[in-house]
Length: 414
Image 1 (cartoon, rainbow, N blue to C red):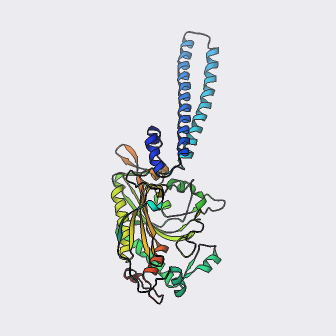
Image 2: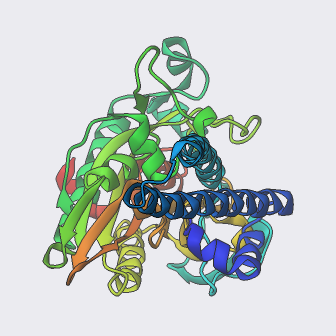
Image 3: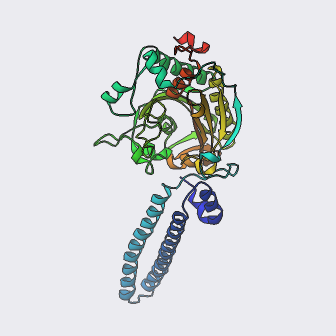
């Protein structure tokens, strides 16, 4: 959640940051009105409390001087009732402000480029040269049919569209990639964690998926449980509503989970193949750090994900997202896009974000800095999306006859 005190005290400056991220001006005006309503309610309440204190002192004086207290007592009782009503009004105003603020995205860092959408993102560098094929490279769904690797039809039969079944060598390769990713992350200092794939609404609110993105989540009927859209949710919320010691930080976590997304609003996009599925495997990195540590850790996470792609021999590029393309919780994001020769384009395979204290404020994750409790910084990123890595290997390591080579670093896993 954004820092409401900062927003209230520096409204124009804070509004400019949110507009950079695409927040509608009408929403900001609504926030301004809610601030005014809360300020007025609190002011009236404080006046009533001051009057109550004043009358309480008079009450004592009247008793000592043996004056008639009938009228004063009536005023005191009436003021008490008014205070109760005013407290309810102030509480309702505070709750209204907090409800609206839960749907307001994080402030972008000042360094984030201006821009409206992915067309305005900034390429920082390319890593590895794409292979020059002596034949027309096939797309992964053609290769899947030749090799019997992916059964799209039976995936639909078992569930619905955008589900698929991996068979034989593809299933083994999926498992090999998960193990390889976890091993690399563990070598970089991340603790491996196995977490529940179902989380409750408080956890999803903590990392920013609720309430704004409920339509993209699969909810369990009659339960306060959702299938997780990413391991970022359980890994970050391991420390939900906790106060850590400074010595514990940074905490680096990694874990494999399937991820479940309705992909609301993506109708017609990537309907063919495995690029955009309702269920997909991912290995996640999460860091919980002090504000002083978070920038170095962010750079390390980007380097780690890029290094995994390099070890796999997969050409990719590093992209800095502009303000209009940043995710809801992110203050800054670096995407890694892998080269897919069959599609003749780069496609996102990892997104690494520093959320600063945005998620920590929602999830109440703090650390003890001397006598003060300070909000941590939380970071998250894929290392990597497994299905898209599988697709990238299929397309980059294909032979003219449609067979597929296995990257050297994965052979020991297969």
